[in-house]
Length: 274
Image (cartoon, rainbow, N blue to C red; front, side, top):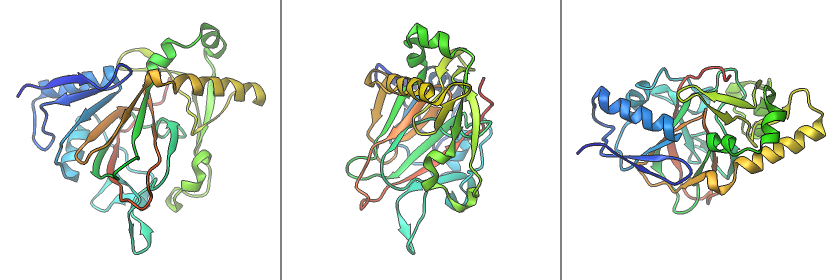
């Protein structure tokens, strides 16, 4: 069956049809997948049956993998895999980010070289909720009012893990993690600009008074989170989603904490935003 690609929405994302990630496939097929991922920010593979090694093998075709910073939540068999789960064993949560909703963000913006892409594979899914929303940061930049593009051109913002400090694992240490990145970053594969701030981790605009910074960031957050830029994914077991942190944001809806949720996450090593 030849590989096909179908849009997930008018805003963002594409579904790859006719790919079995448990099997090897040609370089030609892989390059088609890579191009669609880079152009569409998010790519979905439904109905996959893959173990950790298969997921790692596929992810490595895109580049080197990052070790998870959360060593307590890493899979025992592979330090690149982090479990996202609310399941408890012996009274302890086996995964990271266990419960509740999460605001829009791009992964790891609080470090110098944030992960290029994140790959999430669904193993157990609650009956309702826990959906992932993806927002197209490229289209949001294209549509940004001209006066904001002028005012913010060349400016940077501070990103900090402090915003989610209540979720900080002991393995990350007590020191806050933060880094400064450009407000408008380049998406290397396409050369397009993306808005690179997010409600969860962006703290303030460098060199701007706090009140003004808060107002401008709020305007940016509201703009980039508009539904016209968003696709909401309702998970089913066997879904594998792979998104480009350089060109999109993601968020999570709430779900019943009494229901089990388990996904495997991998992150690609990234480059310093510019």
